Image 1 (cartoon, one colour):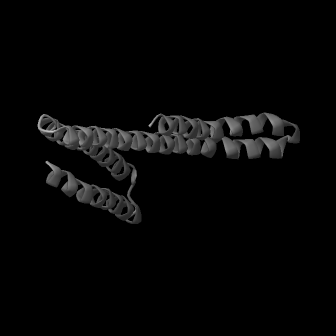
Image 2: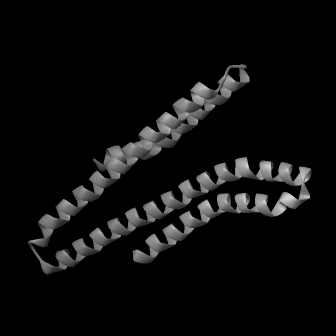
Image 3: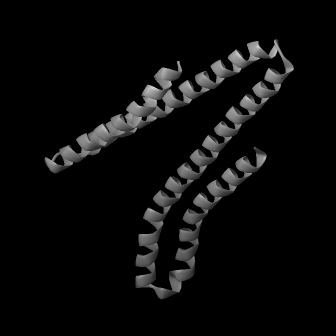
Length: 157
């Protein structure tokens, strides 16, 4: 099981790079890259699901193997608890990174829409600067909320 996990860790970035290369090639040929980018997102989603399922399986397999050893000695019981704690800590760090990354992406999308509109509104009417600044700050707060949640997750580990 772990060999398949390591092979997938090598194949996953290669698959993402291949789909990105296909999207760029279609764009250079003058075709619409929307379909290729959709394929890239689909491959990314499938790979995220596969990696998460395999990582849970690898951790579960290592936990069951150490559970059989705990019946033999007390020293291996302490080692099994440490291994379980390490795997849960790793999953917690993975969750914190995922929260921060997704919140950053969401904040970037919000700012991509709000900042140009705020600049245009301020150029037309300088009195609207305060109102437009609020909308830009709301977009930035999404990313800050993600960072705060990831800090809370890390503190619980």
